[in-house]
Amino acid sequence: MPRRFDLPDRIALFPLPGAVLMPRARLPLHIFEPRYLQMLEDTLKTDHRLIGMIQPEGEGLSAIGCAGRVIAFSETEDGRMMISLGAVSRFRLLEPQEGFAPYLQGRVDWSSFPRDTAGSEQDPDLDRKALFDLLARYMETQELSTDWDAASQAEDELLINSLSMMLPFSPGDKQALLESPTLADRRELLVGLIEFALHGGENEERLQ
Image (cartoon, rainbow, N blue to C red; front, side, top):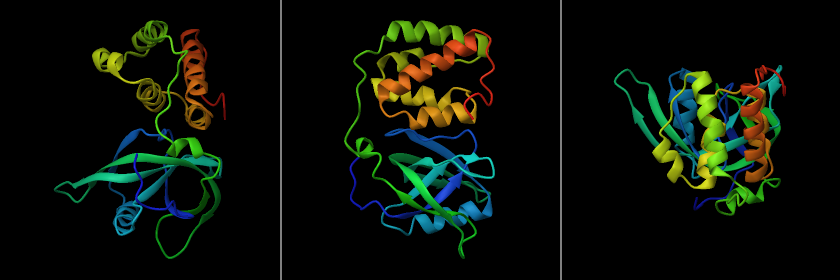
């Protein structure tokens, strides 16, 4: 997505188990805790409007997260906020920082992920028929549904990243998908996770 700001070396962090934001994807969030309402208010005052989505890991946080720019927000009648984050880039967390704010912030480094800001990726080896056949079996076993028309028309990156974010994998598996170096790597891992689930494997905690 176009950027009219410099990537900062410090951003607000939103630790949320099982919630990952993939490059160039969008993530809707429902914010209601007072500390995160404050985080949103403070973030909207910055030029970059970035929030770092990151997963808890053990007693701390994962090493890698993805920052999204607040691209839409609306307030409900009871004061809660519905927002949408548009992914800008993954980051490596150098140091979580607690200060006067009621929410976590972090010192971050962006240099490991130049591809994230270089435009959308393609996956020339993606076999859509095979993926959709596999996905249909998985959806049936999980009692899930999807918009197959929209999925068939989605570009490679949107399809793979959306599935990586939305399917009910463990937090560890989702973190591994986030950290995949390329779109093809992510697709290969995604297929492997679906196949593992179909063969009766329990993926919970498997990659943690």
